[in-house]
Structures are given as C-alpha cells and as structure tokens.
Length: 316
Image 1 (cartoon, rainbow, N blue to C red):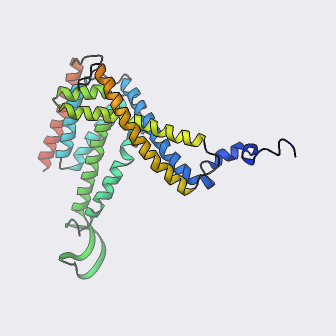
Image 2: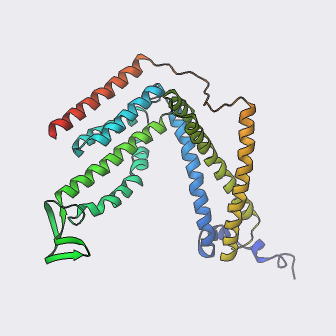
C-alpha cells in the first residue's frame, strides 16, 4: 500500500467539493447557523458603513446635531398628525431630496426603508380593507352572501367587499410608517452615534435612558463578535457534517457560554469606563456650535410643516 493510499479520504479528497458541501447537501443544518451568523456580521458591516456615511460631507452631515434632531422630530410629529395621505407624499419626497443632498445612495436608502417595516404595516392593515372590519362605501364587492351572515354576536353583513374608507385608511397608515421610518433612517445615517446621544442629553433626556442606549449599541457588536468567534472555533475543529443532536447541543452550550462571557465583559467594560472618568454622560471630542446654515435649514423645515398642516386643515 502506498503512502498516498494510506491517507484518509477527507484529507486526499477534493477540497473544492468539501467547500461546496459546507453550504449545500448534507451540511444544510450547519449552513443555517452559518447563514445566521453571516447575516449578523452583515449587520455590523452596515453599521460601520453608516458611520462612514455620517463622516461624509453633505447637507445633513454638516448640520448641528441638536438642530437636526429638532427638525426631524418636528417632521415626525407632523406626519403623525396629517389626515390626508396625499399631503404626506411631499414630505416623503423631501426625505429623498435630503438623502440625495447628503450623498446617500437612494437605492440603499429606499431599500432600507421599504424592505421590512412597510411590508409588515401592509400586512397589519390588510384586514381593515374589508367592510367586515371597517364599514363604508363598497369599492369592490368580492362576494355577495345573499343573506345576513352572523358570527356569534357579530354581524358580518350581506356582502364581503373592500371599502373606500378602508383603502384610504390603509394608504394613510402605510405612508405614515414609510415617511416616519425614512426620517429615522436619515437621522441615523447622517449622525454619529456619540453626537446623537449627546444631543439627547442637551434636551434633558434622562441619563439612564441615554446610558442604556449607549451600552446596548456597543454590546450588540461585542456579542456578535463573540458569537462569530465561537462558531469559527467549532468549525475549525470539525471534520465532516455533524448530527442534529450535536447541532442542538452546540447551540444550547453556545447560548450559555455567550451569556457568561457577556456578563463578565460587562463588568470589565464598565470598570474600564469608570477608571477613565465616565460618569454617565456621553463625551465627544468636539462641542456643538449652531451656524446660520443650521437655522436656515430649521426655518425651511418649519415652513414646509406650516404649509402641509395648513393644507391639511383646509382640505379637512
């Protein structure tokens, strides 16, 4: 028997085939775990990318974070108060204009906004389209029962139809969600996290609330890094696919290990912060200073708000 024949199959086999099998075939169970960790790692990269966007020269990046926060919150409140959906559309268009002026890719921006939240909002409001949930003027009769239909103490009427009031209400809610999420994403993309936390403290947001936000933001990435390290360590010690029982055991043990490590790290990180003078207040290397351009932007936002609110009252 030659020396080459004495080597095991997993060592002499085609390495490319083994790499393909890692995500397909018999290793699908492991690929699910790997896919989850890859998605979490992508979240970290997106966050770092957001910090890069906030460092770019642009319209919103150059504004005082305090002024920007006031303007965005004012727009959010305005969107929630409008009763006519076609007046929300110009505000959504305004968010797109500000995103383009801030050198944000509109494709990235629109995908972040429309990917999940508006879809979930549409699913939630879908039942309100029908006269069973929201009575009104029939826009499209889907089914005529021919008689009164009751379900226990509730009367479902004689027809199943989509009402005009239901459609208008659904459009209004979806546009509110889309525009509100767009404003929030725009604020997050164009503002450094430390500057945003400092702005919250300027407006007397409770210190404990700001502290929780700060630590949560930091520990998300710390826990993701630890989870990825645990998975990488296990992968480097494996030969071939694992059984479902081993996968379940690994996930359970990893959860316990991650919990213990996170608790230990929290004590160490907090001790390090206190030893460096941390007292609960977010600290940044520069001070805020409002300029005429900041006040001009805020006045423009106030003018837009006044116009849409006035139009909403006139239209009723």
